[in-house]
Length: 330
Ligand code: SF4
Figure (spheres, rainbow, N blue to C red):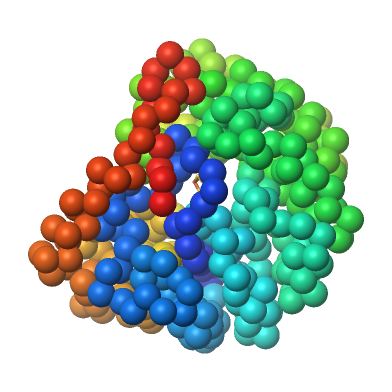
């Protein structure tokens, strides 16, 4: 029997990000963010893969049958080689999508990304209005994002808006949808926060009530029908309050692959947090063929213990409501 081949690759090219969302899905533990054994030259911190390594992964993925690649993070714009990587993906005939906070995007960079072959951009928003959005992001970013959305549209790149929804902003769904219409988005993702990574740590502050979730679902369904000819609306189900677990990516590694900044090949984006030993180093082939390589290659205890001691450094307390939250700082 032939094993199904994945058709989508999520390239998490860095965990660095200038924002500090309390629901960030990046790993909470420094050991999962750093490859301390890797050389630190090439301008990339924490053992991130170098440009040529990413190019190889892109070519390998295309050879494997992957059709689309999403450049994500962290904030992928933090990588100076993003344009080069997108060009490589285009040359490998992959559909390219950028998932970004928009921080670091200006006119020149938008045009450079488009000219390199970028097919679409998913721009994340923390809310529809600046006070709450900036509070959630832990930085003044909302006004910049509005400008960035206009630049993306001017450059002719299809725009999708991503909202992560939780207790603090879930009641503003109608305003978020109005913002998506005003900005000319072709697609909007209303994603209930998924409780892993930092969100799991901050669930006391983020978990909406069942009534809020029910109301949001009704609003999303009505907007989907009303805007059917204009905007694609995706409502991502919440982790909690469902009668049964969500389907899991059509089977690990069967349709989607993730490669993280330090070269772990993951069968789902949260695998390194959920089951740290299920990953393979830097070979898309290994994991999709189900070989014995589905193991982390760098699990020696010295490295793990060394990294664990740094976990305290990334814990900082701030507050987005009466309940204190912990935010990532790397
Ligand atoms: S969720 Fe927020 S902090 Fe995490 S990568 Fe995205 S924009 Fe950055």
